[in-house]
Amino acid sequence: MADRKGARAPIIAVYALAKTGKTFDAGRFCAAGVAFTPASDNLAPVLDATGVMPDVVEVSSVSALSKRLEKLLESGAKPPVILIDDFDVMADFEAEVLNPDNSRGKRGHLLLHYKIKRMRNLLIQLNVPTVVTTGLVEPGRRDDGSEWLGGPAMPTKPMAQYMVRLASLLVRGEREGMVDPPEWPGRYVCSPGDSDWMMGDRWGVLPWGEPVPMSLRQIVAYAVEKGHNLLLPPRPSGTEWVGELARAVEEIRQKKPNAPMKALGRWAAKKSKWAGKDPRLLRWGVQDGWARYELRRAPNALDDFR
Image 1 (cartoon, rainbow, N blue to C red):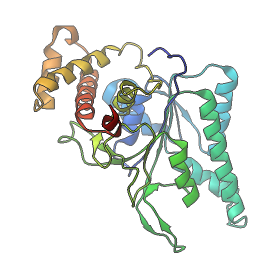
Image 2: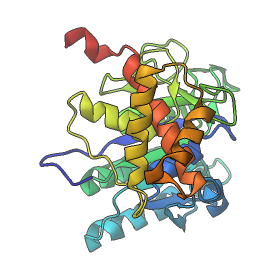
Image 3: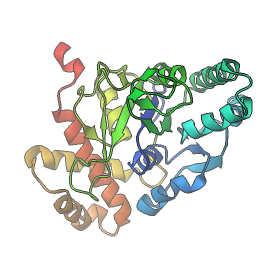
């Protein structure tokens, strides 16, 4: 999608348990850009399932990530979208380097917190759509006796809380699918007023506390439709037609809300304009169309004022 005048790049943070689908969905959203990750194998399922994936750069720490972001900023060769995968792993590694034997106490963690803030400033200067993924920590009491809200699995409580400020959208991923697996990998929940979990929706577009399909692309597209001047990253070259298929599937579901996803997939494969297309991309388009419909039929905060 071409840049609109004054458009802002969304920064989205997703936290979830392992094997929930967060990296898979983030990888699809960022497939036309670059992914920074401690383990390149994390992105392999994206390639297996869609035939496309971001350029992958392995980084082990927050400092190494910031250096990469600085180079992008200095070169002016910005990617269309950025994925920062397993950010908590990078932060944990850096915490060990800064304070290997706990001799520095809080000073090491304060320095790491400063580095994370600096990374956020670099992302704002780049103005590139960005997704940050982390693991999940359940709500409850920690070993030191402190009470934590459930949220991103960061080294300290202030760092976890800072993720709310870092991102325009902070959502929790869940294993349960919107429809029977493997048709849909999982779902997101966002309820900023929740007393147990850290979440945030600066755009006010998601139904609070209600699950939505695991599709960051369609969430950002929906926010744009609701009037937010946001940058939506392009799809990888040669897959632009997947968006057209998604809109066609949404139109079918408007007429037939209970149409099974498998039936929609068979319809797409037989349609002349998409006949012979990679079945992995056909499935992606059908899933995006399913997500488009589900998002637009759910109430959201902005509907109360429009």
